[in-house]
Amino acid sequence: MKVTEAALPFLPLCRRLLPARLADLSLALLKATALELAILAGHVLLYPAGIIQERRGPEGPALPVTKGAPQLPTEAKPPVVLLHGFIDNRSVFLLLRRSLSQHGRQQIESLNYSPLTCDIRIAAELLGRHIEQVCERTGSRRVDVVGHSLGGLIARYYVQRLGGDTRVRTLVTLGTPHTGTRVAPLANAHPIVRQMRPGSPVLEELARPAPGCRTHFVAFWSDLDHIMDPLETACIEHPDLTAVNIRVSGVGHLALPVHPTVATGIREALDTAHPGEPSTGRTGGLTVA
Image 1 (tube, helix red, strand yellow):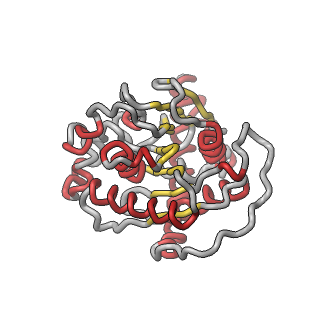
Image 2 (image 1 turned 90 degrees about the vertical axis):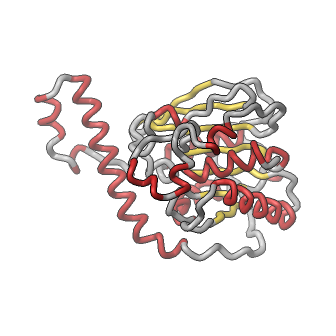
């Protein structure tokens, strides 16, 4: 979805009244906010359809692979597990799932965890059991995981603290508070929100040494993410992890799993990432028009 100036008629006035640099930032923020509201409205409509856990059925035929970044052979592509964020469900991945399917991913599954979940550790154990079932059902030794917001933190805990690096080849996180977010202090009433605060016991566990971790990490973070405070908390900075941080410009938190430009970046990350590359600390960038 593209937000145009025709949809926001007051944007030219902002350009005249504000200094150029401040005006550009304000306009980007206005566009991102409008996009967030549109996505939120659409997601509210789709949310009921995603409450029920998806059915597991026989895999369908492969869809044609379109031209793009260098890709792994279709038969070498592991299953993809999608993990949603806080108080959400699998419906948030409707467009991303379609994009992955159209580019050769034959095995894609979403996991719903309960909105009443109160501990990241328990959710990580649930994820581990689900991934074992996926591997048994598909015959694959490893999977790729895409986690949005809290979902990325749950997946990272599974990889680092529960031995999940033997199963997860690549973990892609979207707007995940890897070092904790300070946004919305009143939300501390929920125990899982307290675990996402800077200095929480869970985040201290993730900061511990993780020598020999076999999973490749790719963290997408947005310069207009209103849920990440500070913004850089969505980056992975750990000396023992092979990680790439990719900055996304022009979208907010809700748009990360939905925007087609981000979906392209996710596909490229899954198709070109290889565990063991000396890429810790490397950064990239995506600009959304």
